[in-house]
View 1 (cartoon, one colour):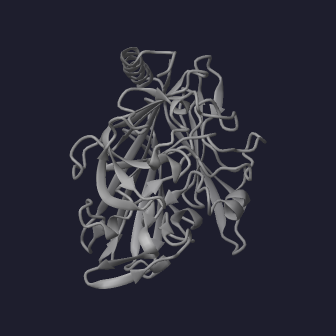
View 2: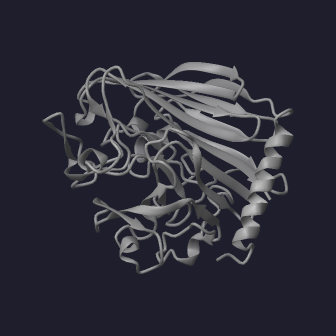
Amino acid sequence: MSRFFSSRQWLLSFSALALGASLSGAAYAHPRVQVSTVSTLPNGKAVKAVTLTNDHGLKVRVLTYGGILQSVEVPDRQGKVENVALGFPTVEGYAANNADPHFGGILGRVANRINNASFTLEGKQYHTSVNNPPYTLHGGAESFDRKLWVIDDTGHNRKGAYVTLRLVSPDGDQGFPGKLTTKATYSLSADDSLTLSFKAKTSAPTVVNLSTHNYWNLNGEGSGTVEPEIVQIFADRYVQTDQNSIPTGQFASVDNSPLDFRTPHTVGERLRSNDPQMLGPRGYDKCLIINGETESHEMRLAARVQDPRSGRMMEITTNQPGMQFYSSNSIDGRYVGPSGNTYRQGDALAFEPEHFPDSPNQPNFPSVELKPGQTYRSAMTFHFSHD
């Protein structure tokens, strides 16, 4: 448990401050949107950057390449603004290096793992791209974060400034059936909330589980370890996995495990636990089942995180049944961020709202099937404040 706050003090402090930030900002933070061309791909197509800002100093930068959230600038308790999202300084950096870490990218068609890179749908077996043998990870070798999206719309509405990106994934893309048309909307509100929402439709029965892979360090990108950060996750259970991070089909209680974040704990407190569920992934990399009705489409609180060094706080809400919690275990010094500093293991946290891993092969999990005429919908919000 952190020495900074008791669990009750931390919760009360976070809730009151977040509410205060929302109330004080609503009348004054006028979100804005700006579009610019930042690069050209080898095929001659232009990559654009969309910048969303408000009067509180928040600035969000989204690339049409991969639908990538490149940076999120947030003030700390002293008013100092820093980027809190890990990534690369250029589009070329993402194109050359991002197939493994997926910094800030949109994951699709199916986030997380598909065991043996295959699944059966309506009696037919499909084989998907093997990019992390023996399974498909985050949609395959050419995931949605490696494709060029187009800007469908930008502007302002009652929720703030927004950009809607569109991607058409053809039938057979990475082995998935049906032509899938996806729209992803990033919006920045006056109350300092960043929302990412998805809509998708298919031409034939398929499977869909979209998410995002943002790496957060609330002390600032490139500032080092996130072990002092205080995390609370509203989950009583998690998806149990084998040594290869493939679900066993069982849900396990977080009781007496390092995955119990029902009360706030620092990341470093149990990061080196010898619990079998921690040894395989070499840290936190588990899908927690968010409390509430798993089939509900209502937004509900999933997690809170606070950095005691900067005072920055982030609250995550989603309408998805699960959330992968990842402590950047595979980041090993190969990547250099905009700060000029290298990223290493434990330098960020990822919170990935989604359906459960390997859902196409797990009949007891909530379904990720999508049929023609249906609309897939998913949403997540990251609300920023400070102490």
